[in-house]
Amino acid sequence: MDGSSQFSDRFGFRPPDAVITIREDAPEVVRDGVVMLGYACGLGPGAMRDAVCEVLLKRPDQNNWSAGNVETEVSYLIDGAAWYRVYDIAERLYRAVGEGDHTDTRRPEFERRLNLLFQEHGVGWQMKAGIIVARGSEPFELATGDAAQIMRRAGTPTAANELHEALKDISRRPAADLTGTIQHAMAALECVAREVDGSTDTLGKIIGRLSFPPPLDTALHKLWGFASEQGRHIQEGREPRFEEAELVVTVASAVSVYLLRAAGKAT
Image (cartoon, rainbow, N blue to C red):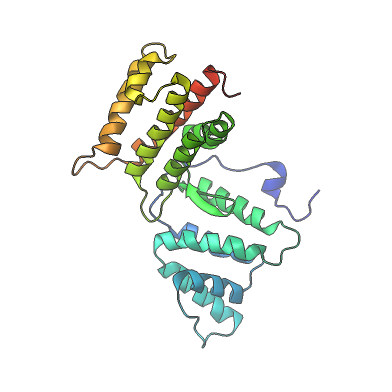
């Protein structure tokens, strides 16, 4: 048994994931958690200050030299940072905790505990391999988790790249590119549909020739129309909402995987 593990980790106790309510914000619980994780994963006050100052492009206060004063300075800098800089700092601390770590355990532990913090407090972000990306609903995570990999294995790398761009756009800080998200997600689905159909038609024309039982074909036509309006012909004053973009990515990913598997191009 690992004597350094916590009681809750050893016995698998954890609260259920909170409903996502935090996206364009870094409340106090997140700021505190990022700082404390840096210390918990081996960074001293000086290293913490160096990392934070590097992200914020601030010069360390040379009048602060004692550990206590430096810790206070770090807290002051974190508290005053723009919300999206807090997530930049988390990425920088991830890199910092791994420097000189010959056990290769500190970065995974930092990431694991940070993601638990996000899940427990309804934060719509997550860290993957040291990079903060958008965290969506459970259906979103399930639909997009392996979709790009399945697309590549099925011989549709362009579709995989489009889905990758959609996920990048929805994860942009400080503001997600929701229009770009919708455009790229539907482009991914269109690439897959063309591969399955063996044509270069638009998705709107291909839908009727695909293996969708009614009324799913009608629903897909409506999704195509919505995406065309929001992603290509957006109206003044009608920006898509995050939840709408998330829904389009979720459905496009799931439908793409379904089509590839139905055509025998993916397992």
